[in-house]
Image (tube, rainbow, N blue to C red; front, side):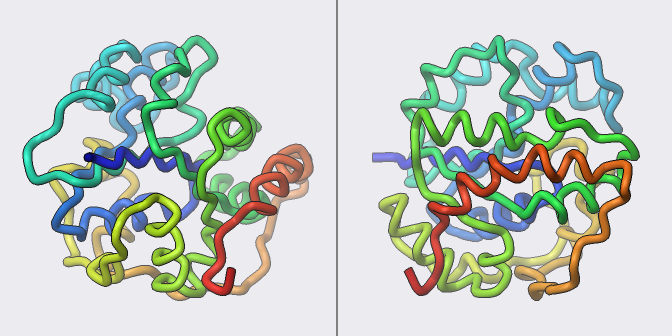
Length: 238
């Protein structure tokens, strides 16, 4: 019985490190942002590596959904799917999500906006995925992990997450070899330098977020969606 974990995250979280963590398990296959090509194809956005991304993945969401719910190689007990919530565009059917163990990686909107503004000057609320994350949670439920809690206590929070997903806790999830992975998306050279040099989760940084005044409205708009999921988050002490 394979557990298909769909981890729904916004950008500028620790989503790639969490994918590394699951990828360190011997029983797990990971897939990196499988709806990215469809998202770029439909929106026409010009992200770094656009041509390579479009060539590397199916552009039809139906084909992606079929692969994510279809047969897997033998010996795989966990299929970890790293998803960006903003890739789940309105025209994408939702029925297939019911076949997955949906989970959610959240981060305080101020930190998301402050980080995103450094790589893309004028993000929109749709770019951040908070609305879609709340939509999926309301429809399907599932465990919620706050990035800050995860960085404060990786072992404790990951153990709680595994229990909530019905899979065994594996201490191998705490460390991994540095370097790229064959399972990384083709966009990795543009975004994954930090995680490629990592061998575990970074230490939690308590520094306050510095949000440009022009983007403060995004934090205010995203906050209610974050608060809704944050109320359900797993903590090591829970």
